Picture 1 (spheres, rainbow, N blue to C red):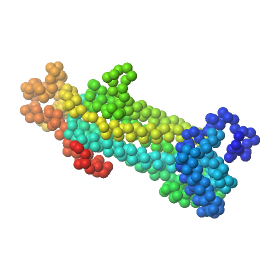
Picture 2: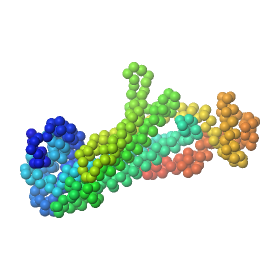
Picture 3: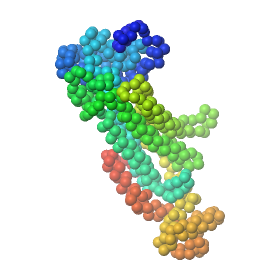
Length: 466
């Protein structure tokens, strides 16, 4: 068995079961690009600072570039006996360029090396997720523009409450995704901090230049405390938290799409590409994509809880427990990116059914609040108006009629100050148009909000069919 890079202290070999239990190469090899990029920057810093000869640094860099090409081509000889991607790359480097490859690890530890790899990886993935969320916002905003004046019931407690514009409903999700983007953008600054140079925990006696290394990698900041640099996983916890919130937002929308696509609602029809059938019931069209997004939200939130529990009891500085940060991070990144991309496609192709939304506006007495507001304008205290309208609703419900189908005389039995103009307050369209308060569902307010979102996203509303 090959000698371990740290094996000088040991007389015996590592047990096979221990190697199997402790290895991370099977999953952390996806960090090879980041590991090689960090090693290239470190080698050049060593040469620049005279810690190794400049020619040696360039020989190391050439070897690392060849290793990157081997991995990209699928020709890299991954050895299961190597503990992780760092040792796999270093061992291959020494095999390619000889003893000079062993100088790469000067003034560096796997502790600051892996912290750097994770930060480089997460910085790129955060950028990719920001781009994906931006496309999701565009899909939602375009859907809102296509159905700007479509009215449907708004719900509280999953009971019909008041009429609103569908565009208003969609723009509520746009606000969620806008906050998601802001959180990720703000988190980028805390991700892009280079820990390289912290070494194992205490720094190094060599005359290193951590800022040069950071500049080579495009990181604007370097660590301020070597102990913190190698043990900090806040940037991962923060990302997992943001990812969990993103998934919760997607899960809420998924729940509504599942309900709206059901026969009971029928507000939308899911595109065939985003649904599946039943193995026994030929008529079924199952909303599998939103159901799985809803289900995977728990998985992502679970990763956050799991890593919080891993980190909560760790003394400074590095502990092997931190190896457990990678699998939940990788799975979260893969899951949330896929969920965002799928929801973007689903909204782009979603079929809205205005006739079913219009039918749902009947029943539920959606303009009852408007009747109460009208009575307030007649001088009735709101609580009194509330009670009068409640009794009117009970009367109408017992007779299977809508509020607007009652005669003025019938209404006046419960609301004596009501007059003929009340009829104008009880129509669905007028109920929507009167909600002109900031952030409300009145068409002009929604048009303003939609235009604002389109401007933020660089969307020309006249480029699509309305």
